[in-house]
Length: 354
Image 1 (spheres, rainbow, N blue to C red):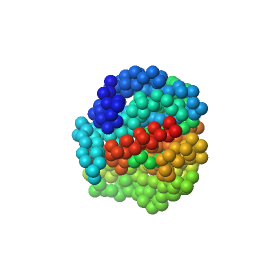
Image 2: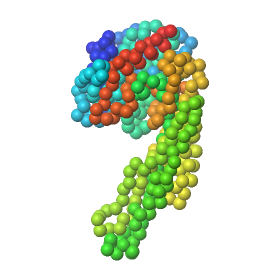
Image 3: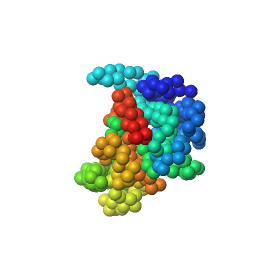
Image 4: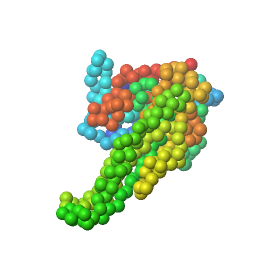
């Protein structure tokens, strides 16, 4: 079992040093399950490498607090180490920010909150950093949807200890241009597929990001080419070109509406959808969410997609709240300010018990 259940800073470092790149979460899931199974106030269920620990205090409301165990691949940044930055202890290493600082807060509180004014379902899930079909929350929804019942959900995504409400939707398409191959010395005999893509690239480069205000939060959209491919040799006119485009849209739009926008922009081009996930509205009008906002402070919009969208689809108002600074997520210099970890622990403890 994890040895630092009574020392939050030590617990963060212990969790970080158990490497858990997506698909390799078994050891960390074992440690989480074994550590929580010793507490009589928790009912613990494991499904694959997702661990769920629930209280049953017979309180009138239930909060789901979730965090993922996996990380992106290690970049020579394990084991972790602590350094002082501006007089604060900062822990460096893969997963410190995204999101093992938040997971440590979950584990610590799950162990120590033997009574509360709200029941809590603590979820530790796998495969968040990879394709949606492998996501532990999605698997949980398929086999044990009863474990995803609650009045509010908090996802411990890195937000620098502030509330980030809702999330953007994301849509990826692949645009295809067809040409005719020819020797580059006789280019007039062919048709250059890469040149044909220029019109689509002009649409992207001239796109003005839309800003949408929802519940006083401004969501700024984005439409960008993220990769391009074409050509087979330095002396051949390319007959194929592909461009991957990512549309990050405000949560006031449905997936269908987002598709319609891209269909209008790229009319005349061949394209197919390669990935799609709807956004989540802020949900700040819920009384229980409002009480958490009153505890933490003014919310901000979430730029990016997170699993709050899964809870929103279930009709559960959800927010992102965790100790990591998202600017350090997935970087080689990934880090978390241990003061922020303590701040999140204290804030959640106060809110759940008062």
